[in-house]
Length: 300
Ligand code: AMP
Ligand code: MN
Ligand code: MN
Ligand code: MN
Image (cartoon, rainbow, N blue to C red):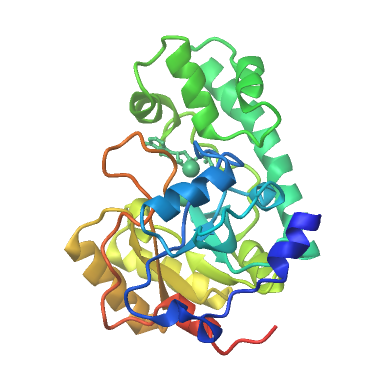
């Protein structure tokens, strides 16, 4: 808990710092080994610093564990405590990022526990469905790979590759784990209003994550964003990783139309792709309101 209170004491307010200058690089979406990232939280901060990032949010899937194992490296980027919560909307998996949350919040920590119980139960369902699809039972092996961490589909992917069933992670998702495949189970995630509520109760900003990844029509994406807004969400990722200029322009319009602040992040997991690095994304367009500017006057 010592680490948690240390981070809490440093609640991020850009107005009291040099962090509101135009050339400051914010990366507000990244993963550590506390979920499915490759680097320990401290190493992730170091890697972000080497990549030129000034402010980094660590946003692991359904866990705050990163903030219990961080030694802030000297000269590293400013750390924003965050989380990426899984939910579902009209039967598709949707992710909500929480930024600037208090990692000690009781409401958020209870929510995290609930999500982790759902993950355990879901792992059993995924294993059962893969068995029905003709694969051998892999629950035991997958739990060993997860090694006590909440189980996620990438753990299944590792086993599918290790056991020679598929040749790489991409194929594991394409054939077995991705949208519409047997392993795409959305069992038990809390509802959109619930996950947004936990973030808000933890003093944080709820951000609709990587909107382009859901492959929704413009009309459906707007409906999702409206439901998110009504649930108490206030920001949307206008830039997430490498993406086309058209996507950025469309998301910027959506943000402006709905009065949502704009976030940006790499969704960095590991360096497997040459282009994947913290801070590796185009800048936010000029005509949106960066989410960090909404933190300037907030007192909590
Ligand atoms: P889960 O949280 O268990 O639903 O697993 C989702 C995670 O799987 C995402 O956060 C990604 O890191 C990873 N993932 C999703 N789709 C793919 C894909 N096509 N290839 C590789 N990793 C993926
Ligand atoms: Mn992930
Ligand atoms: Mn995500
Ligand atoms: Mn992510």
